[in-house]
Image 1 (tube, rainbow, N blue to C red):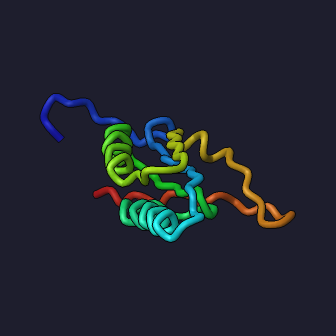
Image 2 (cartoon, one colour):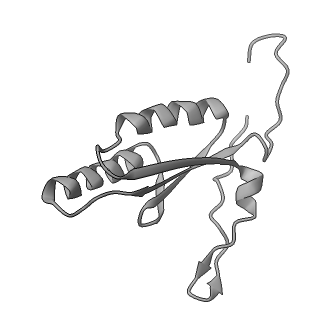
Length: 115
């Protein structure tokens, strides 16, 4: 850390999540190939599939989110609709997730190792 820069504590209001949701056309072989290519692009960027067309990634800063959004834009297919949503870790904590009728706690970010 540069000298004279204040230390910032890890906070659930600074730590972020990025969610990508999309509906892509898959009627023709080229459309299916483009949709699969976009899914692969998201996986290569470190996203995890939470539902078939919903991908999620934990981010440590807003700057990281900006970088990821630019990379997502570079991989957008020509058709369909893609939405990107960013929200804080505190907001993600309140997620209610169900498997059938059973409650399933949302996945948490892996613990940081600080030394």
